[in-house]
Amino acid sequence: MELRIPLTVITGSLGSGKTTLLRHILNSIPHKIAILMNEFGEIAIDSKVIQGKNVAMADLGGGCVCCSLLGEFEAAVDEIIETVNPDVIVVETTGVAEPDALVFDIQESLAKVRLDGVVTVVDADAMVRYPSVGHTTRMQIEAADTILLNKVDLVTEEQLQAIEAKLHSYNEVAEILHTQRCQVDLDLLFGIARERIQPEPHHVHQPEFDSFSYKTQATLKLECFEEFADKLIEKDVYRAKGFIKFVDQIYLFNFVAGRWELEPFEQDATELVFIGRQVSKHQEEIISQLKMCEQ
Ligand SMILES: Nc1nc2c(ncn2[C@@H]2O[C@H](COP(=O)(O)OP(=O)(O)OP(=O)(O)O)[C@@H](O)[C@H]2O)c(=O)[nH]1
Image (cartoon, rainbow, N blue to C red; front, side, top):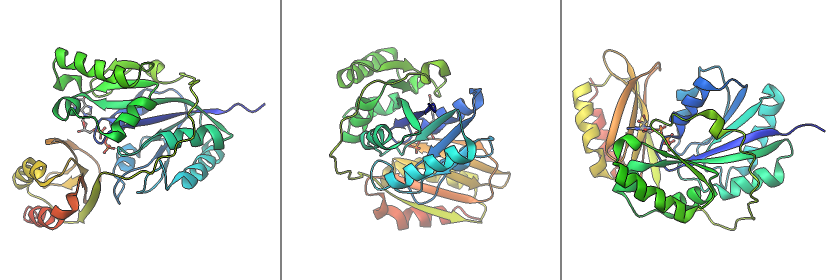
C-alpha cells in the first residue's frame, strides 16, 4: 500500500506569525517539504518571502482556500506530489480562513495525503488589545491540534495565563506552546497524527476584511514612510505587508495592529498590501499619502 504524505495546516489570525513560522520550519526541517500558500489580497507577498529557500511552492491565489478555492487546492496538492514527491506538505491559510472546510476536504477528498495536524498561531498581543475573539479566530482555535501562543515578548506573564485560560475554554484538547517569533521544536509540530474527525461543515464564509494593493518603481523616503506607517492604524488598516524600496535598499515591511517593522530583503520594487475592515474606503487617501513619500 502506498503511504500517504503527511500534511500540516497552519492557520491563525492576520499577522499572528504564520509566515514567521514557515521561515523557521524551512530553516530547521531536515525533510523534503512542499508548501502551499493561500493569501488574502490580490498580490502575493508571503510566497516571495518564502521563495528562494530551495523549497517547492504552490500559490493558491487571492481567494480563500476555505471555500472558493477548494478545487484549486486539490489540484495543487496532486501536482506538487507528482512533481516533487515531498516528505511533508504544509499549507498556510490566509488569516481570514475558517479551517473546517479545508480540514474536511483533506480528510474526504485527498487520497494521497493524510492530515497530520492543524497548527494555529495565536497573536498574544492582539488577544490583549482586542480581547473579543471574532468568529473566524474562534474557529481557528477550535480546529487546532497545537496552538502556538506567539508574541509572548509583547505581553506580561499574567496576561499570558488569562489568554491560555481563554484558549482552553474554546479547545480543551490542543497543546498550547508559548513562543517568540514561532521558535518551536519541530518535533512538537510534526508527527501529531491527528485522529479527530471533522464533520462536514455548513458555514457560509463571509470575510470580515477587505484589501487593496499598491505597486511602484519609485524610491521612497524613509522618514516620510515612517510617519505614514505610524498613522495607518487611524485609517482602519489592521494588517499591511510588502516590500519597499528606499534609497539604500529594499525592505520587507510588516504592520500588524499599529506595530510595524522593516527587515532588509532582496526584491525588485515596492509592492504593498493593505488589509482591514472597510479599509477600501481609505484607499485613495492612503495611496496619495504614500505617493507623497516617493522621491
Ligand atoms: N514582537 C514579535 N513580533 C513577531 C513575533 N512573531 C512574529 N512577529 C512579527 O509579526 C509580524 C507578522 O508576522 P507574519 O509571520 O508575517 O504573520 P502572518 O500570520 O504570516 O501574517 P498574514 O499572512 O498576513 O496573516 C512580522 O512583523 C513578524 O516579524 C513575536 O513573537 N514577537
